[in-house]
Amino acid sequence: MDKRPDLNEHISQEDFLDFYWLKNELTTFCRNNQLSSAGSKKEITDRIAHFLKTGEKLKPISKNRKSTSTFDWNNESLSLETIITDNYKNSENVRAFFQKQVEKKFSFNIKFMAWMKANVGKTLKDAIQQWEVIELEKKNRTAPKVIPPSLEYNTYIRDFLSDNPSLTKADAIRYWKIKKSMRGSNKYEANDLE
Image (cartoon, rainbow, N blue to C red; front, side, top):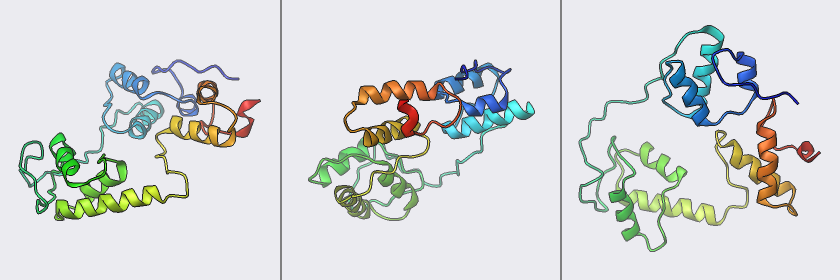
């Protein structure tokens, strides 16, 4: 088994990409090398890999469009007719509104938050209807929940436990710690138990 190398400016791009790194390790590397640590874990990883290969310090791609709305999602009074604006924020004010409107226990989820961002111009009444559709889909789901690729730990634990029902989450975590310290894929494989 290859020993996991230190994450510093002397690591090769190949070694860097072959091992698992926590986001805080990546952001520390960025700080130490005057790289931007903005963005998702994947964006930071790509920026570091580019730096290690070329020495070039890429700036993050700006995703910020200039908002035209000045609606204050933290403080404004909300109603079913409130229009979703281009500066929409998942605030405590919004959470409180939705909790009052739906009889079920309301919570934000990734799919609903993405819907809100993608549906500027619709109303909060439309949003409540969409939230109920998403909740019904979750309730009736037969396939396992899709875990975003950036959540390698969660995916590994789920796949490990699914393949080894007689083992515990503590076992899965123990094997994850071994797996992430090794060169190569961080996906669960049946031979991880060998």
